[in-house]
Length: 167
Image (cartoon, rainbow, N blue to C red; front, side):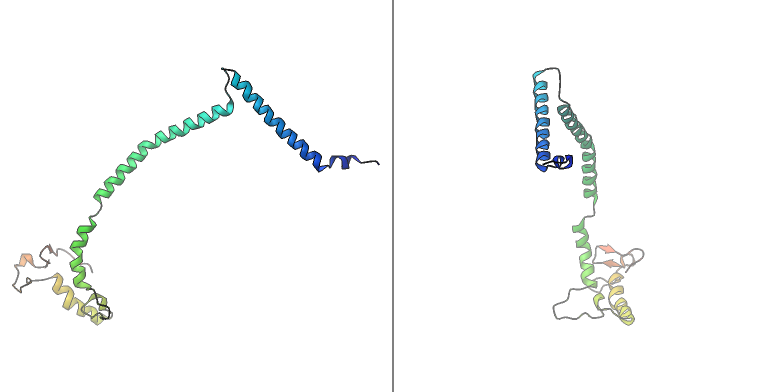
């Protein structure tokens, strides 16, 4: 039987076998090169040199980042220490908040004397006249004794209103 050159070249088994042989040949050359280089004292493998250089470069970059890391930590520490003292702010603001927005029981409804009970314009004026102004602009102490004029606007005996009031 005659075979064409096309059918002979198109043998899948032969192509796979040739690829396997080429792979093994390439690996054998690499092993022989490694063995030859390991026997000499003066030659180094290019791959080994590249690995050493890359590792050295990564160490150097790590050393360069050390001052940046220390600087970042210092700035963060200073910012955290200068941050507002939340506990003191809460202790100062809690009585005022409780007076203007008192906590409600489960079935209790808000009244116009409380900020959460204000929903109409008339209730806004009622809240300002009965709760807000008497609380922030006190002219008597807790016993009803008139305060000297320089102590007007004292809130809970530790804070005095000065300047504008923003609601």
